[in-house]
Image 1 (tube, rainbow over the protein chains, first blue to last red):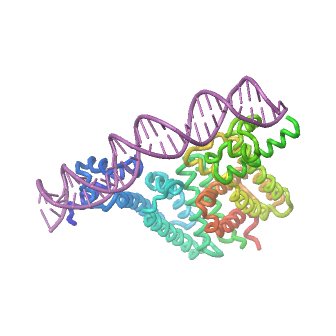
Image 2 (tube, rainbow over the protein chains, first blue to last red):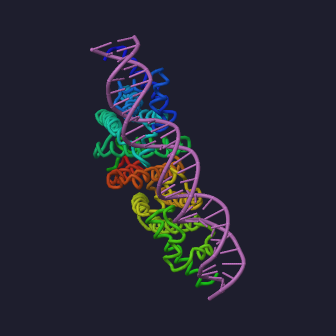
Image 3 (cartoon, chains in turn orange, red, yellow, cyan):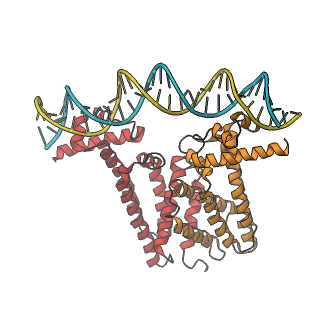
Length: 198
Length: 198
DNA sequence: ATTTTGACTATATTAGATGAATGGTCAAAT
DNA sequence: ATTTGACCATTCATCTAATATAGTCAAAAT
């Protein structure tokens, strides 16, 4: 594929992103997207095999953008407790704006978008790695202490993924905001060295 | 209302409970319920103004049963950390079996059952009271310590209500089971007083 | 050779129309 | 006081026709 054709592919994804974000998967048509870039529906199928694959690509880019920003936080300096706090708050803020991601989690309760499972699994693995990195660093530096670091990572992942749902789908972002700070304090307190009584 | 008619009312609620639990609000008809107790649809309307009111009563009894059992735990002896752990695990176990409650939280994502708001609000307030009781007792006895006890209660409520959703609606009860123990440990650890001394 | 087009097909979705089922009412009967 | 069964209005399920949409492809354009 030439450079120019890749540019068309990008424009397709760009248009698709806008439509999917605004109207969702079902209420966006391939015709809408094609029209936006002054092409015809058939042209999209030169670059993507299906609407599902295109949606997949859009979601992938949405989450990749989040990953890049989270990765910066993980690789930044600062003590691990503070990094974990920044990670959590940034994660929630960025994902709160990720409309297509919201649609996929909402779909979990109704029809399921099985075709995005791979992208979501990748994101899950990314997050597991990042959290493990943060906690490991904290352990090495002597700030944090765990009886089982993997269990702690699992717990944090469960909590982050659980609170997403009321937060994003039921729009309780503001109502729960204070409790999120509280959650971060609690997580920190329980992992802080010399505090853990286990 | 006489004693005998109250007995009929109970039978209505009993039949309604079975149908609603098994088939849900929409797929249960007033005719089904009436037939089960060898009455006619109209008879139910002598005791309840509407299907919604009947469903409300069923949900209320379901949650009242949970409340009674949770109340026993809160009023039991034992140190507050251990009580909080038992409360959390029992709460999840009991609510995991409360089918009508599940339906109402699932409805939050689709159509909302506004007519059960009162019952749910009552349960929320009950829980807030119970948690406040547990934590206050822990504080008085010198086991626990908080910068702001109400914020801690809010946090715990947010977490309990958040994890319900994947747990009950996405049937990840087993997958998350281990992390729930971990959550209880974490909560306990962060509230425990004098954790640095051995 | 690569990319784009527009006509084409098959499938899915919607709109409308009909009939059945259901929530709710009520006067009469028990 | 309680129960009944006929009754009404509205919703819901089912069918059909028409429309819209995803996806294909040979031909045209670049």
